[in-house]
Length: 321
Image (cartoon, rainbow, N blue to C red; front, side):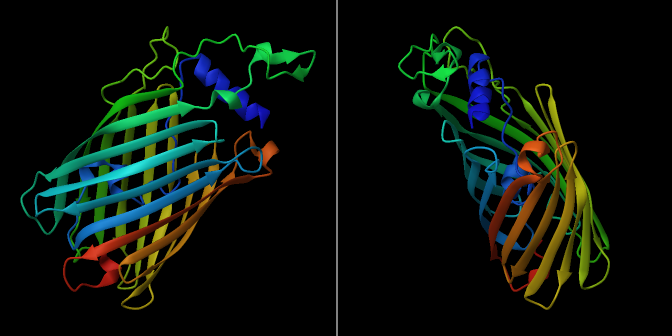
């Protein structure tokens, strides 16, 4: 656990030169994947979703990410929604985000294509429990003494900063066509707000670039496969996920979901799920492949998501992917 604390201390000392948390089920919640997807649905009135991720429990106090989200279509051109994210990092450093936004479909009502743009705004609240931190000055001959002064001048133990995100999204929605491509590009923290806990530091939350692309291919009336890629870049750190998902129609109300992804230089991801009528249940597990695997024994993160879809009209449930 002390190694995790050391990492947190280092990030504070540098003004929190950190990256955003990530999710293996990156496309589970549309409004988080891309602001341009907010409420952009063909056969659905709204989506209510929750997602949870638990990681690093094998080497320290867990890192947990919790999400709740809701978005809806207003009409054929407009959608609105919002989400809450809470990152609990070893119960020492916490990040809470509340974001609302809307999207507009650029193309007029179209049964084959959907091109939309979206904008989000909200707040990010960050706080640190100083009592849980360890500093160099508090070590005495190899022993830790919490009564010794840390020697650090942490001006604030919490920080509230603005959040503004922008995105553009495209997806093919022709149900009579075997191939429907999709792609999106999004920008997060575009105001580059100050985030340092130290008054003397001018550290700013770095812009995050995010993109996704893929194609849904209808093999037959029962099977759809979905190869895709997801990538994001923030400061000098990048993440690339590539893989394949499949949706198999058991009957008119049940669909089985499965997938395999690889996050480059980090983890192999296995996903299994089931959709019953208008509710999706998905679970995934990360098998660690990075240099940390010698400490985790290959153990990574567990993640699940539940998405409830409000159906606009009587429709084949298996097409509501």
